[in-house]
Length: 410
Image 1 (cartoon, rainbow, N blue to C red):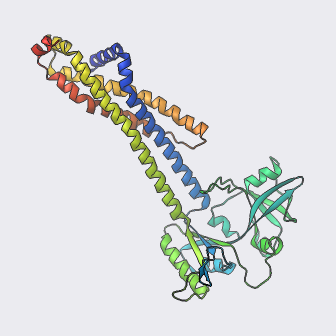
Image 2 (image 1 turned 180 degrees about the vertical axis):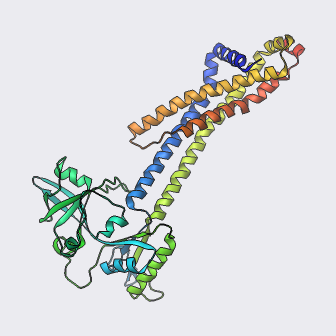
Image 3 (image 1 turned 90 degrees about the horizontal axis):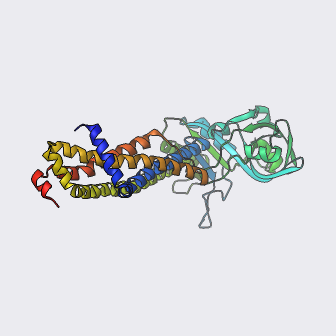
């Protein structure tokens, strides 16, 4: 008996018991659909994390002031202004592993343009900030050296601020007021989307750090030019832990911190935080796929049960086939093809359901998904393997029946 004839007989047997065949395939359908959906959702989560890593900047360390002890009480990060612009410049100059170090000042306030206004945050920065945070200018230009040294009243706007103040109009050359200080828009920033904490990274205004200190925040007095943070980008190929140790050692020297004393600054390695989150997302995806695979296992057991019932019901048919010349391997092939056909039909229906479920999640939950050919190949291969594995025992049992005993079976 050839394979084509076996498939034809298998399909005829499945049509005779439509409801039973459909219930048997249900486990396979649900399992395949769940595997495809979980892999697509997990891949989407992975891509979102990669976008966040790209948006934050690769190999990034954030240095914050504070982490001091006052009167026996330990103070948290940002509790005291202990960082200066010169600290950032020294880190970039003295540590070869550092590609860029960007000191920054942070503030918040109401921004006005004509009849429109918007509440947002702004940063006073140097041009190293763009390299450290992997931020590109979408239109216009970055700050000139004269802008940075002369406290020029110029700004770059994030996409959210542009849409809130100007809509679809071109903001380049327009004047806005930040805390009643007029500023000229010289550029816009590329979109970054949400951060890993769910914050809108495009809701921001960038200005020269000297402008923020002298004209907006009013921190021009004093010889020490304190800053709120320093963004540090480590060169590719350099170990983050080694760079972090070198930064800590340099800062302790600059701040004259004695051995045994606590640091008056805090270092946060965002790449490690994102790597942990990425690993957690990967493990969760594998866990969900494993749970979904249980449905495939249950479906396989269902196939075995139904094939055993089928062998029992068709014992006389098996005896007749053997009586007219069918050999054991013909019977084995026939029932094995039936099991594989049952699994593959369920697999293809599961693929359709999985694609539909994935698109529904993407539409209604606004969740990024990635549909690829790999989950489909995996699902079909798994379905065929289940048909072979769970269908072999019933098929083997049928092939070992003796013709005389099979013909006498009632």
